[in-house]
Length: 282
Ligand code: AMP
Image (cartoon, rainbow, N blue to C red; front, side):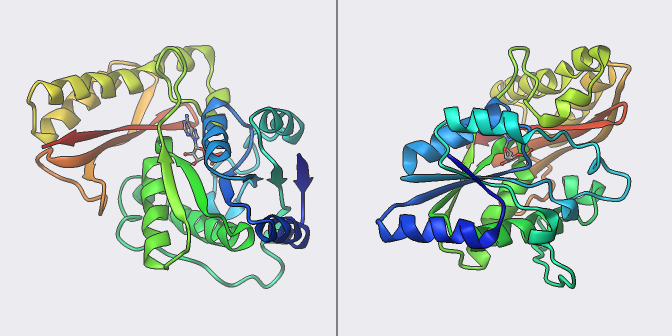
């Protein structure tokens, strides 16, 4: 496995693989790998000849006052884990390589980025869609893998790839969780022991909501209210949003029907956690 820092060298490797008739699977990340990332790498490895992982903490998707500087970074540990998971190439560019002086081009997906995390983090998705477009142009994958953990991100990127006729498949893989249900995230390392214990309320509230839906509840307001109250029972939890939306337009729905995303963002101290489930109701 090789770690590549510059776009030209990465392109040479991809070109060689293409000439040998190999397919390319791609997993974009911000690094500090955990089993959630590794599950995407395993899937990419299973479905493609060449597996490329990118590690880039993208300044463009962090707002003012967010955790760009503190975001955990450990390239050496990441490389060891990626290699074990069957990764062939790590692309870990510098900020200057991705955004040289005078950089001026951005990609915007409308509507789907205006709700949920898009409402709380202005400019966040513009940063994500811009960097992922650049990475797609550099890596030219056949398949790109994203986690349902960041459901809105994955749906926005799927929409972007379709709208812009990008010649690749966007695949969305299940959320990998800790034993107690907490969705794995590089940001979980910020949590104090007390916050970590209370954070299990997120997945628990979603699981219980899913049960209610299974038993026939279809009123989105009632489910939202139930999740809100459950989370508020933990004193350190500060709700950013609890929302029930459709998976095409990511627009709030009053009645749970068809494929529906139940998503939430909650702060524990300075740490903002997200989680979600997708329910299918006919
Ligand atoms: P990040 O490094 O947090 O930007 O995440 C990189 C990719 O890994 C994104 O597609 C995430 O959705 C995915 N991911 C992060 N956490 C998980 C998880 N717990 N389970 C599955 N995928 C995840």
